[in-house]
Length: 356
Image 1 (cartoon, rainbow, N blue to C red):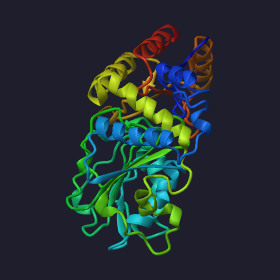
Image 2 (image 1 turned 135 degrees about the vertical axis):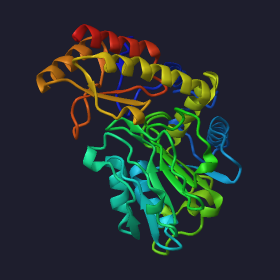
Image 3 (image 1 turned 30 degrees about the vertical axis):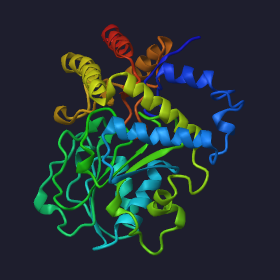
Image 4 (image 1 turned 90 degrees about the vertical axis):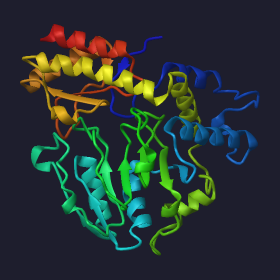
């Protein structure tokens, strides 16, 4: 069996032990004589899978009892609509910090449903940093303030959360959930597509404080109402059953690694190995502001498109896959999510040294 070091931004690498466990249970899950993919979501066996997945999510993230954990479909992009439809219920106003392409898309979608203010943006810097925040520019009676905690395309992340006072903080954590310790109580709502640090594509996790549920706009479709899913334990309709099962296995793996605190230390070490090399290189240049560098997505460039193509070609030949930067910015992007072993990072830096 040949396995590469997969630096893809998402869908991305999964822990090998998780894939092997899923493989061993693929045809016959725990003596049921069928795969989880074939199993009724109303069965007792599947109920135990989704119940355990939620319990593990609560445990590894320290989610308080007054928050609901929902397993939904539609990706983080669906949340660009669900958040305003459900939360723009008082003033009809919200603040969006625009720190990247996905943050901008979320803001543009929210404009369909209410009055949206942008207190800060780093678009003029090509999203190479997290914008400076001036609290005086926040909307005092906003229904929420939205941030994207890690910018997959540009390789930046929030190292300090905005102080929103009594205004609920909403966060898209698709590309850094479970990579570092967070205080869930700081947030009114967290959402994340699974395909980076949680599991395969097709499942979205939403963590929402209970007092924010049940206030959706009258025009909100039933399937886009958080109350629909909260009241039915994420099973109003058939959920992405196999994706939730894989999430459960990934959460078990995280627990086995020592939890999020231990993974954060490993992630910091992995990122430092690459950034230290970039800081000393005369050929390869990091693109993100040093103060805002992501632990999950390391972005850098070479002097020409020709050299970039040569680098990617050599990387592919050495089993270092999916290093091509996003089409919006080009260059190189190494996504080093939780499941990327430190050996993969060291192999990448070794190539960088030899190439230079």
